[in-house]
Image (cartoon, rainbow, N blue to C red; front, side, top):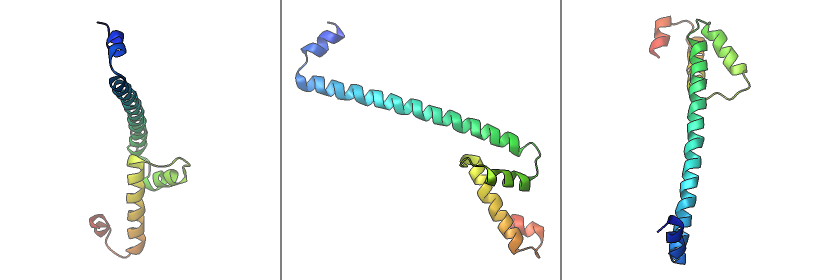
Length: 105
């Protein structure tokens, strides 16, 4: 009663189902490893962004560096870029208003 014996003694339909399940399992594991790699790269990008953000750099300079970078922005960098762009727009639009009003939106 070996595994190969059980597979060999099974009907053609059962062998087909087992092959289909094996292929689905292989594809699932490929997706799992691919997603794990994506998560690792995302974590590394977050760490790099946080290190630059909390380093005390001027936020306007940091924004300028991000927007001139050729790499597509994802995650926290993308969120920071959108938020800072909106802040700059409000600051230009409401230059005559109290700066505290900008923070309240």
